[in-house]
Amino acid sequence: MEFAELIKTPRADNVVLHRPFYPAVEGTLCLTGHHLILSSRRQDNAEELWLLHSNIDSIEKRFVGSLGTIIIKCKDLRIIQLDIPGMEECLNIASSIEALSTLDSVTLMYPFFYRPMFEVVEDGWRAFLPEREFEHLSSVTNEWRLSYVNKDFSVCPSYPPAVTVPKSIDDEALRRVATFRHGGRFPVLSYYHKKNGMAMMRSSQPLTGTNGRRCKEDSALINATLRAGKRGYIIDTRSLNVAQQARAKGGGFEQEVQYPQWRRIHKSIERYNILQESLIKLVEACNDQSHNMDRWLSKLEASNWLTHIKEILTAACLAAQCIDREGASVLVHGTEGTDSTLQITSLAQIILDPRCRTIRGFEALVEREWLQAGHPFQQRCAQSAYSNSKQKWESPVFFLFLDCVWQILRQFPCSFEFNDQFLILLFEHAYASQFGTFLGNNENERCKLKLPQKTMSLWSWVNRPQELSKFKNPLFEANSLVIWPSVAPQSLQLWEGVFLRWSRSSKFLDEAYEEMNNIIEYNKELQAKVNALRRQLAELETDDGMQESS
Image 1 (cartoon, rainbow, N blue to C red):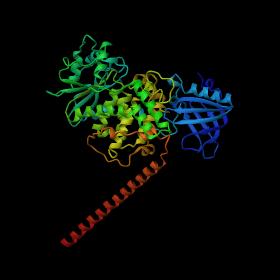
Image 2 (cartoon, helix red, strand yellow):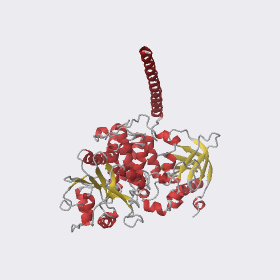
Image 3 (cartoon, rainbow, N blue to C red):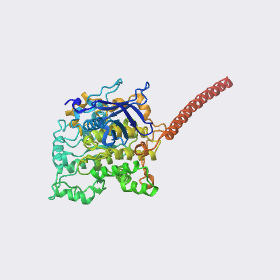
C-alpha cells in the first residue's frame, strides 16, 4: 500500500493552528505518510508543528459555513485545533488523518522509516541482553542458571529466548511446568535480593481446573527458591472470588495441600477496561475548566485512578516486605502474568534495589520486566484517553506503573537519579514513537519483525550524554537503603506533570527548577573550593611542623 493513496489533500494554505500556551498561528498544513506538519514559513521555524499520526487518538470535525475545524486529540493527552478554509478540503484532510493514524500493519509505522540524524554511540538493542543482566546475578550467587529452553519461542510464545531459573531444575522439567501454567508462562526469576538471598519469581496462573490437576515439577521449581525450614509467599493479583471463578475455566491457584510451604495472599488489582475507563474519566475531569471545587474533587474520586495506584503500591510494598523483612521468597502472578504481575514485581524492585533507581538501572528494569517479560505494548497502548473505538485490549497498565514510580520519586526526591521528565518521555514513547522499542507485544513478535535490524532503539538516543543531562535529577544522592513509600491516601497525589501539563502552564515550575539547578551547581563549586582550601591548610600545617622539627 502506498501512503499517497490515503492522502486525499497533501497540503492546505491559510490553516490556523490553536494549541495550549501558544498564540494562534497561520501557516501551511502538509500531510506526509507519518506526520502532520504545520509551518508558518517564519525564518526561525519557531511556529512549526510536527505531529506523528500514530500519536493521534481521535479527531472531531466541526463546520461554520465554509470554515471547517478539526480538533485533534493526542495520545500524550494534548488537544490541538486546526481551522481550515473550505469544507471539502477540511473533510479530505480529516479522512486522511483518520486513515493514517489507524494503520493496521506494524511495518508501515514510522520506526521502520525513521533514519536517525545523530551518531549512534551505543546500540540500545544490545544494551540489556539477558546474558548481561545474568552477569550481575552470577557475581553474587551460583544457585541460578540461564536457560535457553525457549530459544525458538516454542515453550512459551510470550517469554524471551533466555530466562533465569534455579540451577537444580533442568529444561525437561521446565517444559512440563510450562504445560501446567497459563500460556506456558512457568515461574522465572524476577529479582534476587543480595542482602539475604531471597528471590522473587513471576509466572501466570496454574491450570489446576475444577479437578485439582497437579504438577510435581511446578512444586519443585518454586520450592527450589526456599531456604530449609522457611516458608514462601504467593501473591495472587486477583481477588479470591475471581481466582475461584478461573478454576471453572481451567485456570486456578496453588492449593495449600500441594504447596504446604507457601502461603497464598490475594491482592486484587484491576485490569483491562476498568483501568481504561478510569483514565478516560480522569483526563475528562482534568480538561474541564468549569469545575467548582466539590465537582472537581468528586470527579477525581469517581475516576478511581488514585485508588488503583494505592492498590498497586500496597501490593508492591507487601512483596518487598516479604522479601526484605520476613526473609521469604515470593511468587507473583495473576491470570496471564503480563500486566498486574509486572507492575508488582517491577515496583518491588524500585523499593528494594538502589540500582533500579538509577537511569541505567531503570532502563534495564523496563527492558527486563516489561519488554522481555511480554507485556503486550502494541495492544495495551493502541489507544489512549480520547479514543472513540474501544477494543478489549487497551489498558494503561504501563502508564499506571510510571505514575506509581512518580509517587515514590515525589516521596524520596533525593533517591532517584532521574527526574519526572524521564518518566514522561517513557509514557509518550510507549504510545507513539519514532523508535522501535515499544512495538510488538513480546520478544517473539519483535524477532519476527526484525526490529533490532530495521528500527532504532529508544535507548540508543536517550543514553547519549547530551540527552541524558535533561533527565538527571539534580537532587540525587545515591541511597543504598530500601525505601518504603507511604500508601496513605494523603500521600498520593495527581501527577500534574502529565495530567495538567496541557491545561496549566508550567512556566513558574520550570523557572523554580532551573533556579534549584543553579543553586546546586553553585553549592558544588563552593564545596570544591572548601576542599581545595582544606588541602592547602593541611599542606601548610605539614610544612610548619617540618620546619619546627628541624
